[in-house]
Image (spheres, rainbow, N blue to C red):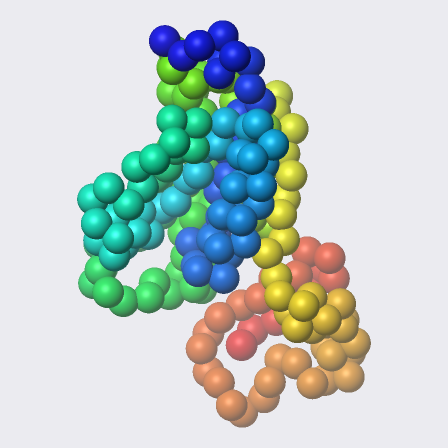
Length: 190
């Protein structure tokens, strides 16, 4: 069983979108909160968890007892371990297949005798299925938007780019990808 001091720490679960540009900023924030006294549970997909272990060796995720790594399924069939997963397919699969395993993880952590009860969720802005989990468990949640400065600038001008007809790009791609913009109430096919 964990010490009384350990069990009284705030416990944040971090869950980034499974792409390097999302994982790295989430990891930096998790490390900062850890330095401020938080117990951290960092959740990757099974696919990325295995990649981390393979790239750094079996002990790469070992370390501090109050900074732990977990994984949940992404709902995709097994694929080449060295390939990059399709972003549009991940965007479709994660909300459908990851809520239940994520809730099971929270339940397991809350019942564990060696970690404090989960006190909050810090989720990537595109992993919005975690909002349902936060509501189910009565936990506060922060949606952390991991975009770069360039990405933020593009997002802030998205409406203007659509209204001027600059996007979606015409005649260049035929990906069949549909971008749904909740803030604008429109869907755009790419």
